[in-house]
Length: 201
Length: 201
Image 1 (cartoon, rainbow over the protein chains, first blue to last red):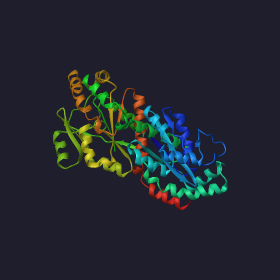
Image 2 (image 1 turned 120 degrees about the vertical axis):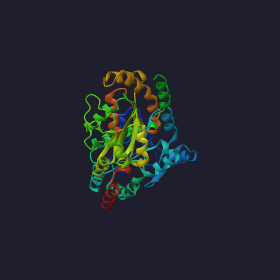
Image 3 (image 1 turned 135 degrees about the horizontal axis):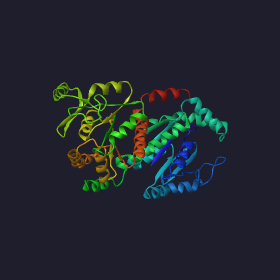
Image 4 (image 1 turned 45 degrees about the vertical axis):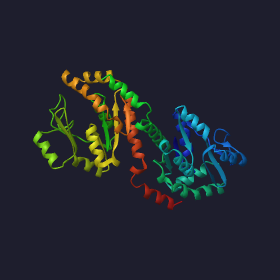
């Protein structure tokens, strides 16, 4: 379970897409949300867009691994697709905020790899938020105002990437994923592998 | 402090050399040993070759971070060059066995990244030991006999690489080093960086 968090505009969404393009054995966890789609967003790809009632129903049925309300909109991670992917031996990528990460960590600390993406400086964050042209200037101002609170949680993550150059940051994301897969405790079957080899020595 | 261990013939020495070629900010820790140089080995590059008396003197003066006796020969890691490299902000690579790794871990667990290199199977290990032509057949037989004991310590390491293809294994070593450098706890100065950026938001 590979979590990437960052303040809006630090490049998390772009880095997530590039990771999914580069790595075939990782599946994106698609969140549910009660907020309205932004221009270009596709239901079932970017998010599952739900009514407030359906969202509350999922919360009540414990169908969400984590959920939170941000800027008056609710976001959550459906449990079933994550469990199906993990059972099939696939990694799962989560593009969630610090609140969701804390809830996931409580549920399954050992499985979690947490990566925090920081912008190189405040001006770059502002420029990226403005240039993506998705939001009104009021929303950009609100996201800038929210950034310090999101950034304040950087120390709860295992890895920190300073995203100055997207190509460098992408390579860093790939290295973290590759290294985590090489961790002894994540390599299923190693005990058997070693036992069989040692028997032939 | 980046440790690579493996049974003789699994490819540790080749992978160490390729890592040193690829990464300029890592320094090899050159061990001291009382064993005789093999053909082609250079004093001060492969090892510092010492008399038994000088080795015992270093042990007595606590000049070694770890030491052990294997096949009747003693091996150790001089403390001074490691401390100098770390103080200069450089990583240090250790090509040592499980005994040395255990001693290093006792001294400085948090700083240590431990990688165990396994051969893909028993036949490959045998073939590699024979084909390097450094040892008499008696020594090859002794190293094969010793392999199960070294391999039995694989579970004391943080990462395990199965070295079937040297190019793939080399990329895996690089990914582990890159990812470890991105770990929050290893990034010195991040607290200051975040504080300064947040002040400008």
